[in-house]
Length: 456
Ligand SMILES: Cc1ncc(COP(=O)(O)O)c(C=O)c1O
Image (cartoon, rainbow, N blue to C red):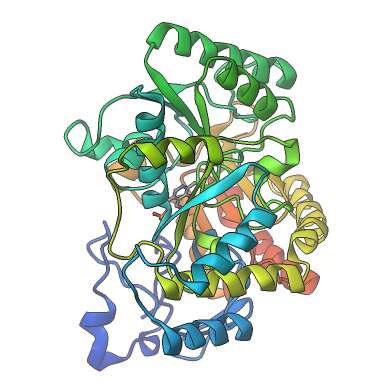
C-alpha cells in the first residue's frame, strides 16, 4: 500500500510492516482517525527503533520527549531486572531500599529545598497530587495556570491544561477552580511588546489576578512550555514570578514532566534561573520511560504540615519498587554519561543546524529552544504568522500539513512529533552530532511540502 500524502506520521509505510495474524490487535489504539493504521514497532536501540519490516527510524523526539537515555540502556535494564527479582512490589506504607536510595539521589539533583517526595506513576498523577497538596496546605482553592500548557489528562490536571485537550470535556470532566494567566510566549505574545516588558507585563497581570480572584493556592507553570511550543521565557520571567507568588503566600508549582532530566541542559529548567519552586512535579525522564513513574517533590515546610494533617491521597502503585529501582539506575546513568552537560553541548549544534532551516525555508516562522529541546514552527506567512493548522482544525479532525511533513520524514527513516503549528525536536540526550545532522537533513527535505503551501 503506497503511503498517502495526508497520512499521519506514525502511519505504516508498507503492508509488510504489520504481522498479519496480529493485525487487529496491533491496530487497537485509541485514536481519532477512523482509518488509523499505526506503525508496528518491534525493537529499539540507542537513538533508533525498528518496525516489523526491519526498517530503522531515528527517534528525533525521544518518543514522547521521555526516552532521554535512548533505548536498551543496559544499566537501566539490569537494575529493572535486579529489582524484579528482589522485590517487585510491596505495600507503599513499607520502607524499601529502592525508595531510600532514590530519595537520597533526588536530594542531590532537584532544586535545593525540595526534600519530601510523593511517588506515583505518571505526570498527570504527579500534578493531581501537587494540586491537592497546594489546596490542603494553603487552605485555598484556586489554581492559576496558563493557556499554552499541558498538565495531564485526569480531573485536576486537565482542568489546569490550557490547550485544546481541555475543551471537549468541559465542564463536567474536570475539577473547578482553575483560572488562566497570560502566556509567556516569545513568538505570539498576548501583549505584543518587547521581551523584557512582556515578562514584567505577564507577571504583573498574574499578580492582578491573585489580588482580584482571591482564594488562590498556587500558580502552576511549565518553566519551559513543552508540547505547546517549547516556549523559553526571558530570563527575568521565572524569578519575577517566583518572587511575586511568594510575596502573596501563593505556592509556585513547576511542572517539569517534560523539561526535567537534562532536556534543557540543566537537571531541571528552573535551574537556568536559580528558581526554587515550592512544589516540583516530574515523570517521563525520571526513569527515561523504561517504567512509569511520577514524582511530586515539596519543601520540608509543606511536608511538615502533613505530619499533623491527613493527606487523603495515595495509590496501590505508589512508590512502586520496580519504578524506584529503575529511576536510581537512570539517574546514575545521567551522571555517568555526563548527559546534562552533553545536552547543553549537543544542543548548541542542534540549535545551529535548525536555525539554518529558517534561511532555506519560507514555511519556517520560528526556531527556538534550549539544550536538546527545540521547536520548529511552520507558518503560511512569516509576516502575519498565519498558522497552517489551528486548534479548531484539530478538534474537527481535519488533516494537518505538519502530519504530511512528518510522514515524509518517516519515509526517510526519521520520527519527529508535531503539535498543531510546530515540530518538537527532542532527541535522546545520547544523540551524536552525526545523528542530529541525519534528523535535520530529513526535516530539511520534507519542508518542501510546506514551502509549496506558503503565501508570501
Ligand atoms: C508538562 C507536562 N505535564 C504533564 C504531562 C502528563 O504526563 P503523563 O502523560 O505522564 O500523564 C505531560 C505529558 O506530556 C507534560 O508534558
